Each structure stands twice: as structure tokens, then as C-alpha cells.
Length: 144
Image (cartoon, rainbow, N blue to C red; front, side, top):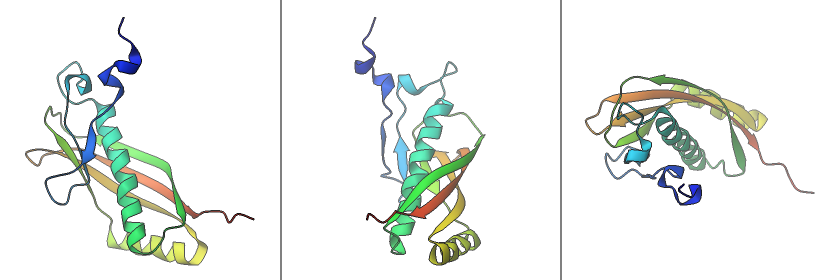
């Protein structure tokens, strides 16, 4: 029996997206990432999207100077749209209205909820999944 700690199925190869320029992260599928039908497994797609949503949120909060806050994933809704065995990459989008509402809540209460989708695309630009993440963000507690 193969040692589980040496098994390549224990890790996903999620990397910073090289192309297209607006992508967040990408995953190149290996045999261990495929389901019995030969497509990338739903769990691998979800892992790529979750890591991407966290990075996308942090990156946008840093741009506003919110650097002493902690994001906590509250919920998500997953919609798998099509199967693929190709490299996949993630795209994040905020609605301007949702971002402004979140920004006002952060300035006023030092905490807020924000929901946004991560689109998982394949190499030919076909959407394979849309996953909506809801994050609760709050200020780090002050140490006494």
C-alpha cells in the first residue's frame, strides 16, 4: 500500500495565474485530480475557487488600506456548469453596489459581510463553475 504522505493526490497544483492577465489562480489537472469520467473533480474546482476568493478579497481590501482585518468564510453556493479536463483558472468580480455597501459597513462598524462570485474557466474560456462566497470581515482584536 502506498504511503498517503507521499501520494500526489494529497496536493493540488494551484498556482498564480499566468494567463489571462485578469485571472487569479490556475490549476493544471493531473490524473489524481480527475473524477471517474475523466473531468476535473468538483472538490478540486471548489478548492481553486475558495483559495481564489480569499486572495481576491484580501487584495481588494489592501487596496483600500484595510490591513488589520480578518476575513472568515461564512457560506458559499456552488453551481457546476460544465465538465472539463483542461487547465482551469479563476476570475473574481465584485458588483460596485455590493463593494460600496461593504466599504461603508467597514468604515462605520469595523465589520461587514460581502458576497461575490468566483468564476472558474477552462482554457477555451468556457465557464465550468460559478461559486458565490460570503465573507464576514472583522477588525483584529486589540492586544492588551
